[in-house]
Length: 374
Image (cartoon, helix red, strand yellow):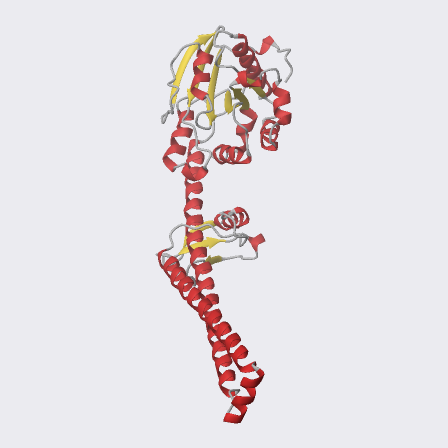
């Protein structure tokens, strides 16, 4: 960003909301901006608004609870508390500061959690959003620009999404207020670009988005349970089928051996003389024993799979590579399916409303024909 700021943009009042992951340094930064210790730097679970006159401006800072990197750990109550911060300033806020620590590598998982919460608001939030890098002392001799270029593509995407609006702050240097003054000037420049408009979303719409988010998560969980049962059931069918084939093979071999046994004493003596019979018997016994071992192993696997099928609760589709489970593509499919609008039919059964582009034009009874887990 251009360091030559236009001081004609100066506002008499600045309202700032801070968003970010847990332990990102939001609260400590809020204290630095207000030049006083008002926000507890432990993990806050409630929104808090404080104000102070700084550089001839009345500065209001709204600190919000941080979110987890693992989106599955975020609850509906946590999301509602995060967005409640906006209700503390009914007229809206001039800036939303997305706090990103410089002491951690910003990965795709971090971006996923961030988007998950930014999506609770409408797309217009990005015009009012700036990336605020904390732990500026970790830059050492590097510039912020160098850090962004060297980081994961997820961070570059975020900076681009914020239209290249960013600032770095070092909370270890609270006495250095030039970094705060520069941030305020950048915010005022952003506000001027937005024609002085504050970010003030419809909170009813925000809460509808939260409701939809957790309905989708619940549906995704149900789909996972059903897919687990279908996978286990299919696995069980294949093992039982394979066991039956082995038993048939074993029976055929034994029948073939019985039919080929010498019928006379002369035949027996001839075979013994050549030493063929003993070797053949030993080989057949080994094959039979091997088949028995495979059948015993299958019996154990069938029992295990039956128990898993009966008691299955949570599940991640296997990747069939003998490695740890990789949800990857299966999660994308589940996300796609769970994005459909849900409803109920006349029998109060769960239904999915497929869009016209999906190939379905009516409400589809999703669970009617499926043996869903209880």
